[in-house]
Length: 306
Image (cartoon, rainbow, N blue to C red; front, side, top):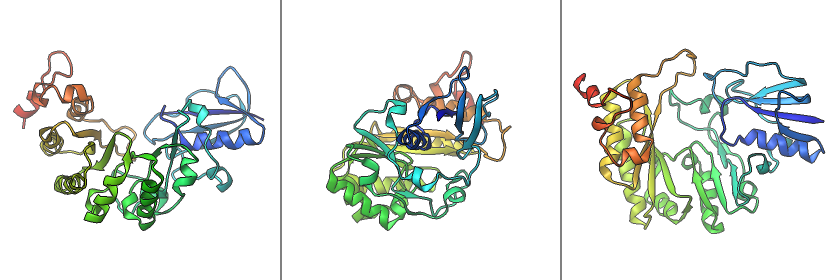
């Protein structure tokens, strides 16, 4: 069979497409990125977000299958595809880097997150040896690995194996105990430890968690996901808190997206706050009030209007 793959709205390595590619190649099929000038027996389309535009052109294929949260929040890969080692060559990924999940789901019900609706409560999924498959660096996309005893057991295994990891969806600072902090300090991290800091109350929890981890010898960076909701003053205070902490503490702004409103307009202040905080050379070199995101506008005006 001649198989085409099409990622509609993201250039980030798509784990499902990599697994689909590996499964078809194992069957002897030809797999390539979709080319509208070619014809295919089957084309797989994936879309991550519900608010992004669909692919708007004719697809030259006998069969078309759509998947991903942007199309169908409940659709999952067949087990025989889901458990296969991904085709990392699809994205020319380094031979020492792997992607995957140890757990799926989350016990929290944050209004900005689809994971509980999509995957349910947290549950064991794969073992780190399956995910890493001999590779020394692993990007783990678990949504709340510390909320699972199985997840904590897997982190202990990560330490014993000596693989370097990045839990790129962030950890829940509220769950960091003294014992967990000691464990996290032993992990070989790929550049940084990430936490969610989405509400004012999470500032103190992140402060507490990072202090505990530092107590056990960690000296690397911390990275904080900060959802931006409706209140400019609250959001700025939360983001700017980490600037005042110094260079090891880096916020990352994420304007809130209403997944049920494809016509949502993101407020300009959210775009500007993200434009300042998410470009680290700007974030470290100037205060937000002095940031000039476009000609004729200085962000000090946001404070004058509040």
